[in-house]
Length: 377
Image (spheres, one colour):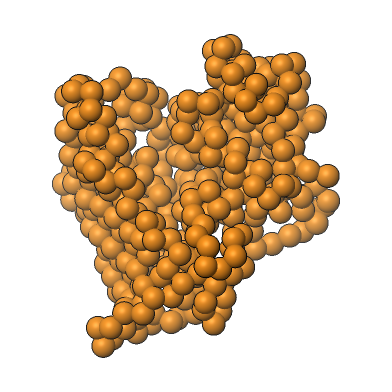
């Protein structure tokens, strides 16, 4: 029997809604049976018609959806703006459902901490979709770090420059009016909360190290919003390693060349999202070797591959790897099995990302190195 889910938010004109739907259903072990895609009836109905959801299972209010559908669902996907994530997730957990939530968990750290405590008390199953950690070659890199192939990690460089915001301005000749630029909806951070949390999560996911402190500087090149759309950070890790993180949404012409470099005492590695099938190995001699998906001795990337080796796979398949693990956890819980080793980001990862953002905001204001609070998530 397939798992059954409903999606809240994510109408046809959204970016993440269709991505979540495709990723969650890619393996054929789950189906979307209900939805509250938009509070506007016409948008809600248009999405339901496209995705073959019966009219009587469409709702413009998520509360009505949960009240009428929770008994027939296994989980919900939340694809709404940041300001509503915790409110909806709380209601879904109270209704006894597992939750898959787009990142960040909330606008800021303060409400996320008690929410995480609530979720743990309820023994809730919740995934936060830091989807880049699903790429097979990223998981290959993670295993290489864990097995000591790199030696001691000494330096990390991660870059996530995007040019979409400046591109919109250049095309229209004016700054856009959109919810992503509204601090009442997204919180006190734009670039760091939006893409910086991805960069931070991927860094810790691959290296197995924690960022303990940072020094950040920000830039806001908009007249209509004070939120930062460009940021540069220096980082320190728990083992003494150093790092650099750069994120931007005004890097005109850049689509999303997400790039991670990790340098150890034995080997360096480099991964670029535009070439996701490969991992570059940087040798002490200065030579480079390219490791392709499915061609390593450990074959970790093969275990996470959906498409035959030699045929490219990418963003959606990586996203689906998270859902496959989330589905495994949901099925184990339904069958009262005590499964372990699920490899998907949890609410604790989501809160840790907000701690990272909060430290960056503090560093922006104070102009100094700032520790990331390592307390209860």
